[in-house]
Amino acid sequence: MSGLFITFEGGDGSGKSTQIVLLAERLRGLGLEVRTFREPGGVAPGDAGERIREVLLDPAHGELDVRAELLLYEACRAQLVEAHYRPALAEGAVVLCDRYTDSSVAYQGYGRAVLLVEEVRELNRIATGGLVPDLTLLLDVDAAAGLEHATAAGADRLEQAGQDFHERVRAGYLAIAAAEPDRVKLIGRMQVTDVADAVWSHVEPLLARAGQE
Ligand code: TYD
Image 1 (cartoon, helix red, strand yellow):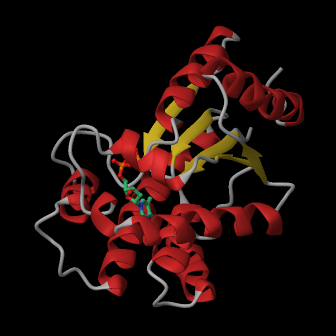
Image 2 (spheres, helix red, strand yellow):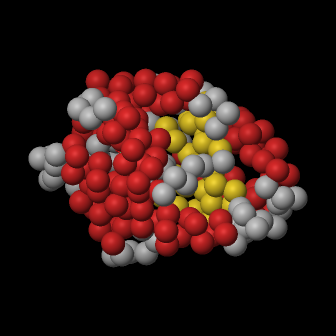
């Protein structure tokens, strides 16, 4: 049995977490086993992944080198892939991730604009052992509008990186979507329910393909 691996991507404040909750509910309503994760992060307070998340997002760590930053994201990811994503997929579950490898390409590659995008992709391959999503939903949102929404409660380290950085991230995401149209589906800004419908239109055909229906 092999499950379905779906990732959500997009700029800060693009509404991914709301859509993941809605999709998880809908899939569970069909009787499917669904596991949700968020990167960077772990699965329990204080575990290694959550501690790496704290290091990455703490505004006090402004000095973090781009390579150090990338490797911390990849360390977090490597742990989740081996300990959680692969076992869940092997059990036939639907795995929903709030961010995955495309975030590193968009943020550390296009956004930071220090490393080559191909270098970031290579580290993604190493960290994940080549685990590629069946489907990636890219929620596109104007960088300024997204940032305003995301930072309403105070900015974390990445959100403080400035408007130009976030414009490059958005452009990077659009380049990824253009390069991999079969895997990555671009969904523009709409009402929450319309975005949910668009998400479903991409997920539903895969349920049959993965033998989940
Ligand atoms: P988070 O609060 O989870 O943001 P969001 O709700 O927008 O997903 O913070 C994660 C931040 O880390 C976000 O600014 C994007 C960034 N990030 C990277 O730069 N590279 C990565 O590989 C990942 C997974 C996230």
